[in-house]
Amino acid sequence: MNESNETAATFPRLTRAWLLKSLLEVVVVCVAITTAAFAFFNPMVRGAITQADAVSVRGWVSNTRSTTSVQLQLFIDNRFASASQLGSEGQFTFSYPPLAAGTHTAQVYLVNDGFGRAFALIPIARRPATFTVAR
Amino acid sequence: MNLSGRALNFAEVASVCSSILMAEWALAPFAFAGEWMIAGPPLIALVFMIYSHYQRHETAQLLGFGASHFARALRLLAAPTFIAICALLLLDFFMHSPHSPQRASTRFALLPLWALLQQYALLGFIYRRLRAASSARNAIIVASVIFSLLHAPNYILMILTLVGALIWTTVYERAPNLFAPALSHVLLSIVVFVTVPDSLLPSMAVGYNYLQFL
Image (cartoon, rainbow over all chains, first blue to last red):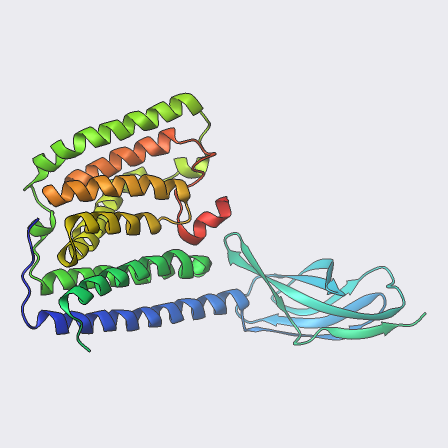
């Protein structure tokens, strides 16, 4: 097999290129992961749960990255309870059969889609709403 | 920091392999946000490899992108390629399992280019750098194992590529040409697509993307 010809300058230049390549790859990976994180976890979703009780959850949601309708999902005590379709922003109301007595949590998630097989559920409120149903 | 000649050869190989692994494992899960994400590190690696050839005064002809050694390489590859094809046809004859649509949808039109690119990376770069730092036997074994590991965790593909790489690197040592191994690669890939049953090879995917087929 034929051998290559190297000069004295070859090794320092290739070493620098090797370091530059590593640095560039770190940048590319950071950009890729950041882009993916923004797309998947959509930080532009805003919303709040304004009322939660034994039979309903109300609130509002806004998704400034989308002008199409959004799908919302309600989770009571971390379990799926209901789904609803809404405009890109507005008020929502979920109604459900009366809950058992005790303390419950409610969180509403926006379904972030458009990634092929993958979906992301983004909570509209920073914390789940906690409420108590009396006997 | 300046690396010695031998260390630099190994560092170059490790760097190119890490770029490929980065795309296969670290970035593939984020491909939903854009397929371009996977292409970044391999493209950087390709630019680096070309720059390395330029710095070492390795011409395209020297790497094997030419007519020289083509006929000899083809003669050397004919027998092992034919035997491998016969073995795969025999496997199909005895197992005759159905094949999945995922595999059938593989872009056959791009296969020659893809095979040539893989042969260039394996022989024109990885093997050449390892050969410059070690004996032919060691370089053949290490390059083949690396090529196989880059196809993890698709274990059937790992076995097939290990055998293929051992043949291609051995022939490249004696007749440094890239088109003949690429031709062998294309033929064997097509036969693998057609013959190896789904139960053994559900997909040609590698890295993170293969995990969905387990």
